[in-house]
Image (tube, rainbow, N blue to C red; front, side):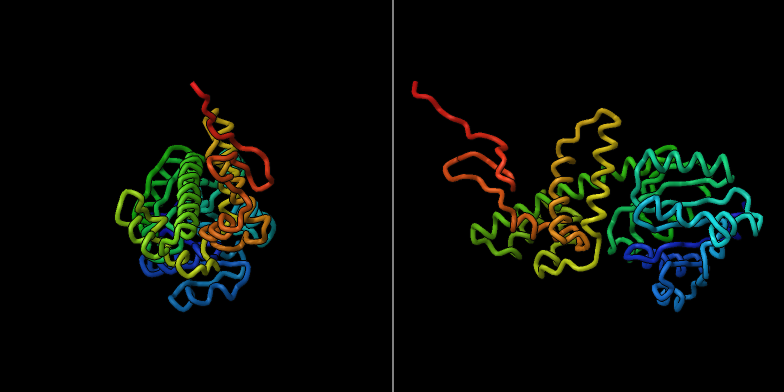
Length: 324
């Protein structure tokens, strides 16, 4: 690997998170190569000074960052004459670093890293991110990092360009486990706020006033700060998709089952976001769960009656009292 000052960097994947990350990398590092499957998505960062590669092979720098939804998309960039592996071989790269910024299975990324290191000498670092599109735009993301300590240390100036909080959790895969924990909290907060907003609406409370009151107390959170505007406008286009939120919750439940950890909340959230995706809203921002909650047929019968889910299945019975 070259010295830190001369290390070349590329970013592959210019979606809602990748594009603002690339913009910050160009501004703060001064040099960046980018590649996206649809080339026109690179226009803004090219205007800022990034170099656009025609293929992953052409983007095979010393450090390759990937901002893609799942591991299969990362793996698809490796093979063939236009792939990263051919690019690294062609330029004689030594110990290149491949960073997986997307949220993927902790077990799968660990196996992926072991295979790439053994077969091709590539060091894989998993560095899933939290902070949403606003955090990516501000360069204030939180990165949960797993990987070889030397590789993580080499990435410090790169990570500093896109994140304010960088925590090495352990070996490769540990960053994804931390992100699974993060996603349970994020999804749970969104679900709780959506239910609270529906309750407030049924009770005649102004939505804007409730959000302001919640934000000023213990219920305040970054989720509330970022999503309030969407809940007020009910514009859920763009942003972090419900489909990706569901994928992340599937990983969280799998990780919990593998570790023998409790997963009741994660399973409920997985079912709730699953209903949102099945309803055709999977491409909406995950805050659009408000629609799913508002349209749910789940109900509580009057006077403390039985609680049923959307299919009418009994969830719990009310407490009964007996005459003394």
